[in-house]
Image 1 (tube, rainbow, N blue to C red):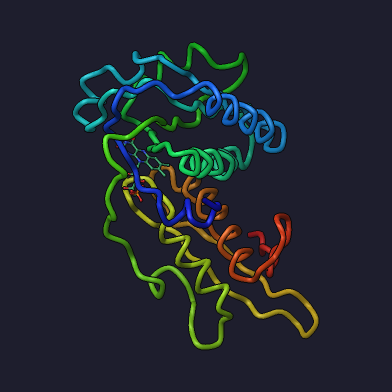
Image 2: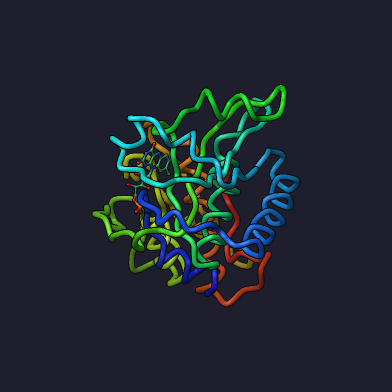
Amino acid sequence: MDLIDAIYARHSVRAYTGQTVGGAIRLQLEALAQELSRAGGLTLSFRWDEPRAFSSPLAHYGKFSQVTNYLVISGRRRKGLEQDAGYYGERIVLEAQRLGLNSCWVATTAKRRLVRASIPEGESLVILVAIGHGENAGVVRRSKVASQVSNVGADTPPWFARAVEAALLAPTSINQQKFHLAFCAGDPGELPGVRLTRRFGPYSSVDEGIVRLHVEIAARDAAGLGPHELPFHWIER
Ligand SMILES: Cc1cc2nc3c(=O)[nH]c(=O)nc-3n(C[C@H](O)[C@H](O)[C@H](O)COP(=O)(O)O)c2cc1C
């Protein structure tokens, strides 16, 4: 399964079977987490076989059951930390999907104080991701349409339409999908630009990073480019 397939296959899953995640899979995810932590300047670390964070009535009310593994994303407070948490965390989410696991981003429905006690000194907890063998693969949820979140149209290239489609498949906090993607044609001989903006909403800066990763993966795939190439450049705000 490629990353693009993982984008289409992924849905939030909150009920898990309790089956332990095998050692080989743990090692692969741990290795990727280490690599991404270095690249992103944050800390992505797994807690395996640790049921306490999701054992509260709040977690059960939030429909979580048998969550015993989760990813913790933390970092030193700085501009862009939340976006990076979304971008690099979603890379782990998609890798987990490729490896046959399921996941759910978790901002509020866990014991944050308990998790906070275990993160590196001087870092802030951004967010968690529950990971494991799901009771099922999750369900397709309602979504905005491309015209609500972008300027996709007859004048925009096919890779942009695919990128917007992948952005609409991105998990967002309370399914808010509060982002907008604008294609901006470049001068002749120059790469076009894409501007990603977010609207105000809880955790919409984490959402922004997640959407950014989906856009890059889909645009690259649709344009037939290599792992580090893109058919556009990001227009930073
Ligand atoms: C930043 C972020 C925070 C989230 N926090 C929670 C949470 O605290 N509890 C929960 O049940 N789901 C949470 N979710 C999952 C969203 O509700 C879910 O991604 C959204 O409804 C879209 O559904 P999908 O992931 O199946 O595409 C969160 C998702 C994101 C991206």
